[in-house]
View 1 (cartoon, rainbow, N blue to C red):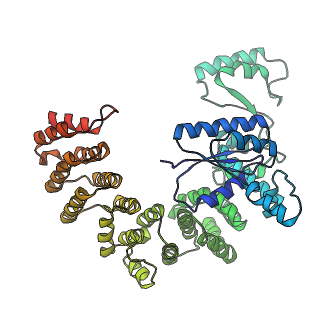
View 2: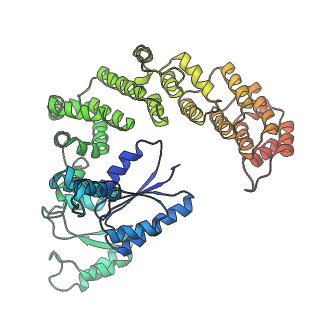
View 3: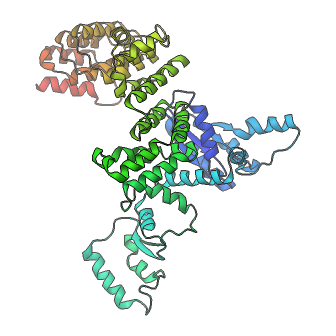
Length: 518
């Protein structure tokens, strides 16, 4: 579930606003929904943006966060006056104070922020890549067709489902019989043909040409997906991307790692492919630049993915990849708490299963005693003391600790009956409703099969102080083997003690019916 919606508004492409905003948001544990609103260069477009922002505020019940790099004061004034979000204006925050300090006026020109940090060529490339990613990932069927039939003056296709032969055949017959002389194969768009297939959304496009805007960039996006290209050529392209500015390689990361993962061991043994991989492996300058960028990544998931790609193309041995993983975890522990996402990443990473890693982190002094997120990471590495500490955190009054324990238990099942009984008893003693609900929901995923623990959970139902806690209890029981319980007694307790609900039937009612029918 997203925490809230974040809008990025610009009278240009919005890339700078989004980059700046993401850098700020990375400092918070959020999962926002991103909406980029580019080219807001008129009052009318500003009002359209306001309607979208205010609608999000009304639906979500929270103020959206709005980052803007608008330079037109009239348009910005409309946003400021009518926007029901939290507005963060880059010009208002930085440019105006600098004007005062420097004693000169800024240019207030669209796109000026990008000029300050990038060449025009680089900015154009980033804009094109972002456009491709935002619209169709650069690999829509139409784009692939245009790429395959490069320089062909006219291509017909359908923007929705194409008609079947029994429909298309008669229409084509009618066209060939009625088409004006010289129109067929002329390279000119036929209005007659488009009208005949209008209900099927026929469209006409030209093949890509070197003069098309962003043709080179769209060609890049299709290079790894071109079925007509050899693996050696695709690896040469992958190498070329890695040799560019590393931020561009980061933008291509999805495509690069998907292609690298598709190469089977047999393919890698082919002479041309092996030679291309050796060329990449031997490019030490590019390797070092790439690894330095990866190590500095703010997002741990991105860092891990970049290191995995490095391993798949020969830049890291398995031992080196594991050392990079350990370095990443140690560095993030040294900064303070690990986020839920980082704990989840550690638990899901195969390298974490090496029993030698936890002692190295402990010996290095990176682990903070009493820190639940650090304990969860160590527990995922097999440390028994950290495992016990993380289980205790499940029944902590601190929401953050409970959330970390939840992440851990998604990866590690409770197999010890005594542990399960101790947790169940601790949950029964919890007094904070929200934390108790989350602890119960975590227990539900364990699918309890211990009669004593199930009975303790059932006994908790009459004592629950909120409908949310009662629903969480019912969620555990409905997933478990109720043959272990006195079902008639449990059903009677549910009916007698359930708190009033205004939302109609819920999991409690479903459990009552199940107990009565079985």
